[in-house]
Length: 353
Image 1 (cartoon, rainbow, N blue to C red):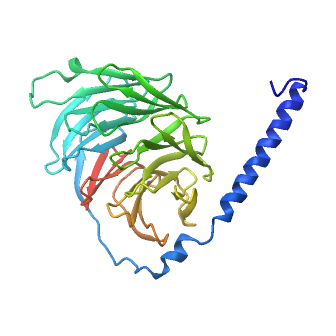
Image 2 (cartoon, helix red, strand yellow):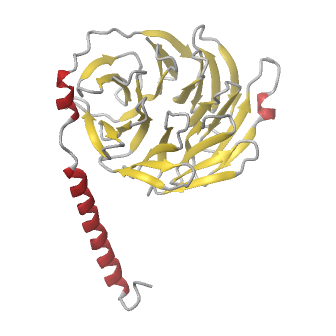
Image 3 (cartoon, rainbow, N blue to C red):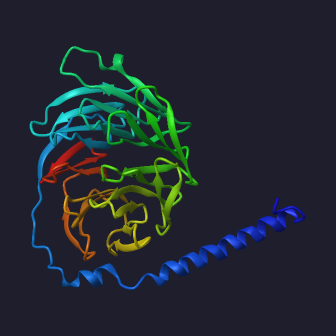
């Protein structure tokens, strides 16, 4: 062993200082590639005109804080989960509730729609991720068909189906992410690298996408290779928990929202942070972020009950949306990009367009 013959405390101290100096060298190398700022490049780009977004639908039915939501690929249905232990499937056009499941635990922090639209996944303080098939039979007992897929040793913070209904990716308060086989409930791959609770994840958008990004309480955003389980890239510029991560539509970058009241954009090819979206007047954390379909706008929900709309290229705020009466906890742009839905601690969801 390399450490033979060294005193224990000496070893740790020397290794720590070596690690720090290597980190410094890496930062220097990264800085050499840093030739120009994004907003400088974007100066030639035309500014965005005035645009008006309003609440078009309000979905009421949860008895407590809405914690998570996801769109169905049919661009119409929405699944949402809440602190009251309920998971509801909505028709966002008519605001009707199509399905409702009561989970065995409160604080259902994660929910996701399967790509086929035939199932939903959810979980939270039960440390599990459960999959429920959806059918049109109004009398069927959904709970009877529940399938427990993932088991973590702490709460489930996020879940997402991969490109098929057959695999599901989960993030947990136990500091890991994991990939599971839905049918057998078998663990296919686990991802270790965060030093604290993992709070969010997002899959790379491409069909062949074998990477995903996760963010957590250790202020780190990590890009993972799904096949090897290895960390491919890591970014550590936030000053507090990362609550939300979302890939840019092209898959070449991702945005993050944090308790440090900023959203940031990381370019994967340049391997660095390229933009910070913040204002002096914004002092509350960002809980959720998502891009418009073109990638020009970044929608961000905040704990001060507002939604800010950022111009991704210029780094300026182009709009601020009011309506929720408590903190915005979740936000997703619909698959066709014509609207977005936000969920809040005020027990409601709103569809904006």
